[in-house]
Length: 398
Image (cartoon, rainbow, N blue to C red; front, top):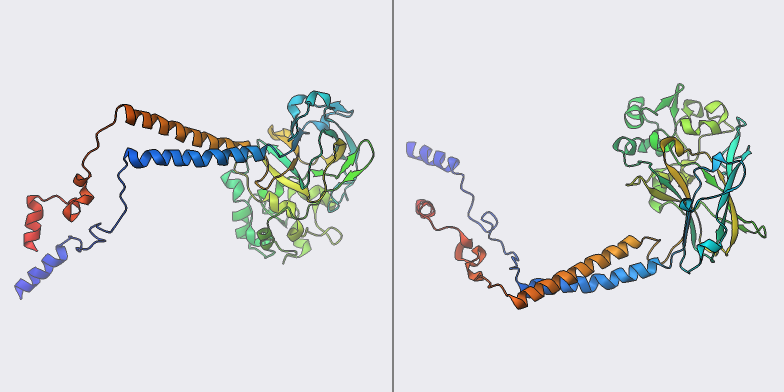
């Protein structure tokens, strides 16, 4: 009996793993030996593949037309002024002499109605509206997209990214504690629940640009705000909310568009399911310099002409030393203007070819003697485990 107990104790104390291919790491595996014969072709294959791909991307990028205009300082000028060259950029697929075209010009006017038909002005506010004239030197082929670009705006701040409540966006009634956790400090205001709550919705970009009007002949070029959000976004927002109107208040930056800063029957809470621009804004940007789509025209070309756009100046970027830009851009089957992807592919491909040539010359001029691969551990019987006295003793004890 005592011998059995001692045997059980010995068995329990044994920490030796079970002998098997998995436990002893003897499963079949590909363990390549890096020799010049297989490494050099890999460098040349990567280089030969990446160089034409990068060239194609860079060539395709040159077929994108893009106009960018900085209108951050428009509210400082009552009379039209031409913009400095540093405040606008023309990147066109067809060559043109930028010194021969009229520079963009802007000034502001005071109006009492918002450009966005969903925005009301029950408080009779005076709205500064930027009147921006610019020249399109060559016809921009449709589809044409309108973007806004912001600089020095950090949407990637951890506290900012988390500051919204997804259940409230779906129209559900959310407890006060959850709102404070997810949306504080913009969960409640003036005794009401902020809807939509949080810093993200409150800071939504709300400058509103009109359609384009030709300065020379009065023609119009129209944009649509439909189809700018991802199809999956519509599942995250609901048309109506479970709250009563009397329980809700708009975010602080939205309050000026509602009587006394509150919702009522004539000015109800917005239909979030239809606010595609809010859905676009809720996708956080990774960098402080970013652009987001504002409107699109999928069918019409924009002719070469002098054009005018009216922009409600609701979003102040100068208070945090940022800028805002109006961007008009076309696309190609491979996307919008982004030369860096093509340059990166060509740089990596060229580097691989260069390294391959250097290593090839080094191998031809002064080849290195290779070791005998039979001495590698995985080529030895037993997986290369050491055959020392301790191992022989353990095998004997088994």
